[in-house]
Image (cartoon, rainbow over all chains, first blue to last red; front, side, top):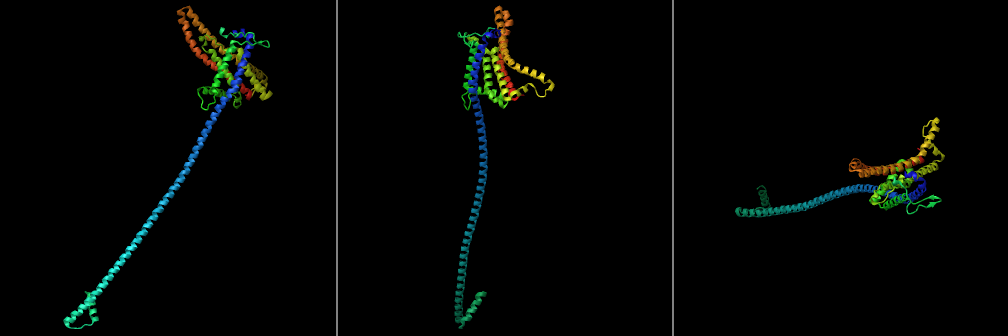
Length: 164
Length: 252
């Protein structure tokens, strides 16, 4: 077994070179590079955790903004509805006013026209009375040769015209 | 057994420090190769990209694995041992795998330095020293309470103390020997089976059919098993170091 046979001759060389190369490995690889590698891993883990946290926070903020937007939107909608109702009421009132005014004008014109017709009818009936009284007196004077009092004629005519 | 022989390379046989031989051997060469490959592997993964590529992902998997192992066995205080446990695990893992690479096909002579207890012993004594230094630095003489489990009857304390002390002191040996034995046993087994294949093939075609071919099929399976063992032994070495560090950090 060379491990035992050569021990006396080679132990110092084995120990020396193992310490040299393992020492190099420990100080250059173990102390020099491994912390960097682990630092990179830790940094990546931290970044992932931070990103997740930021995403979570952004989501929460978006939710809050959406809720705020919704209440604002609902308020706006209610306001718009009330504006529309208001405008509709105003328009209805204005239409009613204009209709009433037009109705008044038409009523006035009708009353005017009716009074004019009544006037015309009255003046016409008065003229008919005059003409009838004149004609009656003429007829009486011509037929009976009587000179009748104008007032009597007129009352007689009026009596006949009224009672037919 | 030739595969375990240590030979000085490049005429460095006479190199010495204070009378101790430090010849640059084939063992040292494979330590250097493992170190360079590990350096390249980790350097390729230290690009610090936010979105990792495959290579970076592989390196981060290993560091995360070691980090998780220390967190599970030692707790939050284990974070500071990640560089050491990572170096230990990866160094042993690369050494074990390099020794199993079929480089003999290319005429190279792979050498598994983890199949020498003079190498694994250094690593285990290193781990054990760290445990002792951390234990005494953190708990002073209170560290000796590690050898008296909770609820021990007063009369039993001396006996239990001795037993626990021995089991504690055996740790560096068991740690180093386990890796050395596992690696050597696997390589010896493969060598024995391959010698069956070759010598039976040289003897006769009938013997090859009876002994050589089944041995060859068995070798294929055992090669896969050895790859598993290479990873498991590196894991066990790192895991046991974590468990011992837990004793030093938290005293049970």
